Image 1 (cartoon, one colour):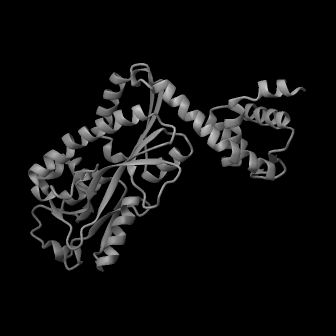
Image 2 (cartoon, helix red, strand yellow; image 1 turned 120 degrees about the vertical axis):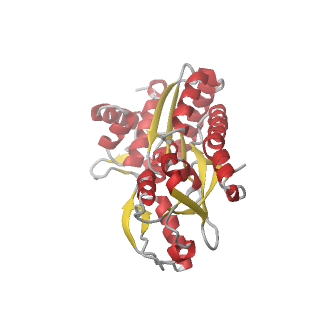
Image 3 (cartoon, helix red, strand yellow; image 1 turned 180 degrees about the vertical axis):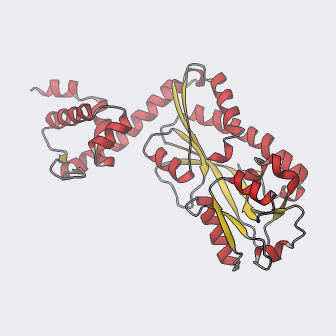
Length: 324
C-alpha cells in the first residue's frame, strides 16, 4: 500500500471513533455513543491501525487499553479534532439561521416554562436546525457535555473548575427557607430544630442537596427529617399541606405558583448562601448559537422568575439576580 493511498483513506470518522473508544474502553459503548454497529466501529479501528502500521490498542485487554503508541497518537489528535469540530460548528452556524443540529440539556428547574419557550424561540430563529432536548441532573448534563453528547447545557455551576468545558454564569439563586403560611412558627426555632415541624429535604445524591447539607452542618442545625424527594414541586406541596418545612431557592419556588398562597418564603437565617446557574458549552459550540441561547434564557428568567418574585418579596432584590 502506498503512502498516497494511506493518506487518502485516513478518514475523520476513524479518528473520531478512535477517540471515543480510547475514552470508553469498549467497542459496545463506543458503538452506542456513535449510533453505529459494533462491527462498523471495529472495522474503522482496524483500518486506522493498518493505515498507521501500528497497534493503537491492546486488544487482549478488557476494557480496551491504549498501547504506548496509541497514547501518543491520542494526545496528538485531541487538539486537532477539537479544532475541526469548532471549525465545522462555526461553518454550519456562522449564521444562526443556517445551523443544522443542536443538542441542548437543562436541569429540571427550567422544564415547566423556560425550556418550552426557549424551544419555540430557537425553532423560529433556526429554521433549518434539528434539535434534541434532554432534561437531567447537573452531574449528568456535565458528563454528557464532556462526552460530546450535548452541545450546550443549563446547569448548576460545579464547584470545581472545568478546563474542558466553557461556562457563562447566568443566575445567582440564593437559598431560602419555606414554611407553611399559617404555621405561626418562628423561623429560627424551626431551622434549629426547636419545633416539631420536620425538615423535608432534597434527595441526598443531588448537587442542591449537598450544598444545603453542607450549610446546615456549618451552622449546627439539627432539624429532624422524615421525607426526602428529588422533585421540588412535591416538596412544595408537602410544605403547603403543613407536613414540614424545606430549604429551596427562589427560582424553584417560582415554579410552585399553585401553592404560593399556602407558603411563606424567608431569607435563610445567618450567613447567606446561594447556588450559581450557568450556561455550559463544549469548546466547539458555535459562538453565535451560544449568544442566542444566552440572551433568550436571561430574558425568560427575568420575566418568569426574577420580576414577579422581586415584586412580591422585595428583600430578594439584592440576592436573586442575573449575573454578568
